[in-house]
Structure formats: structure tokens, C-alpha cells
Image (tube, rainbow, N blue to C red; front, top):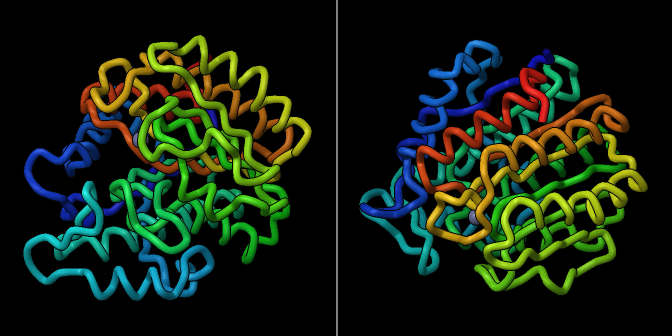
Length: 311
Ligand SMILES: [Zn+2]
């Protein structure tokens, strides 16, 4: 067993984008309840996410983006940012805490306080580009954590693994061409945000997966493409954009993964981190909208991070 942190914040439940929106506060309740029921919560070190500072956000985002989000933040009601994304009175602070979770996770893991950290955050982050919020995302949480690891902790080789069913176009926009970051991504072909099939830089290992290809296609892509690239790169730390919307119960996509697939890919990441990165892993919640499947999938992911389960 290894020690893992569980980083969240009560403010994440106050951000909501209107009745019926899939990216809803109940997602975090589903995760929390499942971890509690399985006895996993007792094994995790709880932390409250701090708010990311402007300085931390500006390592990733343009001053224009930060100013736009601050100006858009409503005091009541909803302010629409894109067709799928809106802000309420609590969104700006929640978004700051979501990015701050990745910063705290990085500090805890680098200090050796914990081996790994899971950030149970909303809003998610991997679609947020340098200059824009989109696709339910306001700030790119994981990118803020990675820049913190580079600038404050001096790391020179960081792996970003993104297994959300949607391509992390925002993360690719931020890190394409950065030789200190290797991004490995799988996503469903032809799905929002309709990017990723043509990588934007040599440090991008993007593997589009056909609809209905199930977990086997992901396992083959990871074995044939991600793992050789990661072995060559020898990351000093591994960040995971952990989206669980490729699950077969999730209506937003059609890859047909199961909890066993999430456990399997997590185990491969743990092996890479153990070989090259002193086991250092920061995982941040992205998508996952079928509430029960989300809870089960996060539990499977965390059980492997903790070493409580092999896969
Ligand atoms: Zn997604």
C-alpha cells in the first residue's frame, strides 16, 4: 500500500451550469459515496484545495483569458461562455480551487508527503486552451499543476496521460512543442472537440480510437504507442487527466470501456511512474457523466494508485 491524497473543496458543488447539464455537482457526490462505501476514503489523506493565484494561472493562460473569465463571472444567474459551458456566481472561485488542487497535489507528491494524489474537482480542465474556456472547462487544471512542477520544482521531464474519451485539445494547445512535456492521449475518433488526429507537436502521442472499439483497442494503443514513448522519455513525474466518460454506461460517447479497463491503464501508468518517477503521480478528474459508473471507475483507478488492487 502507498499513501495517496484526496484533494477536493466544498465550493466545487456550488458551481452548476443549469438543470440537466451532465457536468453536475452530483458527480462529486457519486465519487465520494462510492469511495466511502468501498472503504477507500479511509485510506486516503484528505486535503482541501487552495485557490490558484493569478501568477499560477498565468503560467498557462493568457492575461486576456483570465481577464475575460473574471469579467464574465456573474453575481447571479448564469453567464454563457460557449454552447456547453456557463458560469454561475460560484464558478470563478470553484475554477480557481480546481486549478489550485493540482498545485497542492504537485507540492504534496514532490515533498514525498504522499506517493500520489487524486484531485476530485469541478469544473474540469483539459479543454481549456491558453486563451479560451470551452467544453465545460474554465482553467486547464492539470496544466497549472504541470507548470508548477516545472517552474517551482524544476522538473524537466513530465508525462501527461489523458484517457478521457474526448481529446484534451486545451492541454495539447498549451504543451505542443514543449520538449519537457510528453502528452499521451487516447480519445474517440470524430468526437468533440474534433481535434487531435493531427498532432500539433513531436511531443504529442495521440491515439484516436474508433467508436465501439472497446477496452481492447485502448490496451493495444497503450501497449504499442504510449508505453514505448514513455520508456524513452523517462518522466520524472506523471500527471493524469482522468476522464471516465469512455465507460460503456456513459451516454456521451461509445468506446465501451469498463472499470477493469480503467484499472488496467492505471496499473500501466503506476509501473511507468515506479520505474522512472519515484512513483510520483498526480491525477485530476476530467469527464465522466454516468454517475454510478463514474463512482465505480474512480474507485477502480484509486484502488490501483493505492496499490490496494492489481490489474
Ligand atoms: Zn470528456
